[in-house]
Image (cartoon, rainbow, N blue to C red):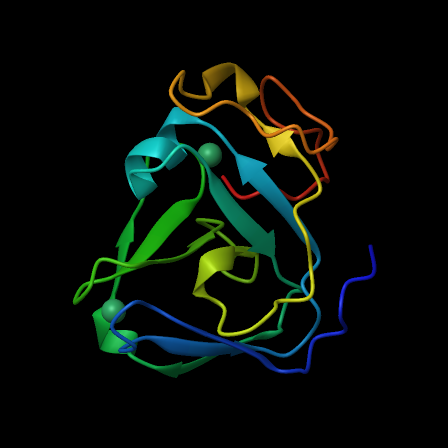
Amino acid sequence: MKIPEPELPLTARCLCGGVRWAVHEPLESCWYCHCTRCQHRTGTASSVGARIAPGSFELLAGEELIREWAPPDGHVKCFCAECGGQLWSRDPVDPETRSIRLGTFDGDPGIRPSGHQFTDFAPAWEPLPDDGLPRWGGRAPAGAGPSR
Ligand SMILES: [Zn+2]
Ligand SMILES: [Zn+2]
């Protein structure tokens, strides 16, 4: 399946539109995550995030609306204070390492999920899709770049 070449920059926003940003380089990797943290964060069965190239992120509006929740381990979760929309996760030390929630993009982000991680934790009420993608019961191998 040929993925349409996206027009850069990619643009994205939260639900209310208060937080808007642009990504100036193609997205690097993209994964489904079925971990319980993603379930509680989103209220859904899984989450899809796309790793961006370092230095490709530009915040356009809404810095004052961005709230962060930093778990004791793993990446910092960022969301909009006005609408509660999930924005991205970022490395607690290096904010350039960032995974954008794929549903926030305005158009086709030009990437497709390449696997499923933490499938051992997938809820019973939503069967994993029969999509032929690789699956890992726990975290995908290092360097694969999934959202956490
Ligand atoms: Zn918002
Ligand atoms: Zn997860």
